[in-house]
Amino acid sequence: MLSIILLTAAQAASAPAPRLIDDLAACRAIAASDARLACFDRTAKAVIEARDDKAIVVLDRGEVQKAKKSLFGFSLPSIKLFGDGKDDAQLKQLVGTMQASTVLPGGLIRFALDDGGQWETTEQVMMPPRRGDVVTIKAGSLGSYIATAPGRRAARVRRIR
Image (cartoon, rainbow, N blue to C red; front, side):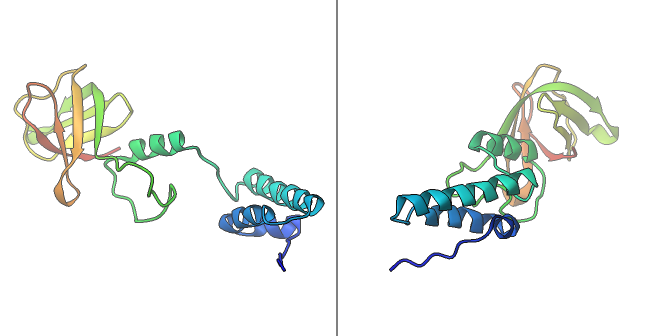
């Protein structure tokens, strides 16, 4: 015989998000239609309340990929911020259009891409990219990043904003 513990809406709203989803999945196993519908109604209400109270946040895959792209180049702690990532392709490069650049002392360059990210070279650059150039930034070894633009020498960079 199947034994299910049902939570009140208040208890479910305070439950961790994985528990809410597990409760929702458990409703599918109830054989009696009336009991199954009551379980779905109760659990769906708890999920919606948790979302409205900002206890959980629901994102689609497109929003997750957009967030990952906006964070490319930053050192982040190892947390499952966007799920476990098993099905997501690892973001290994970023391609953007140069919007502006500034020459810094020592031949370093600070530049902004069209996605709003700001980068800075960590080594001297003889020919800085120009506005409108397509810049590709790839993840290098040991947490480094390398920027390239057509007709320019590759340079190590770091994300500053």
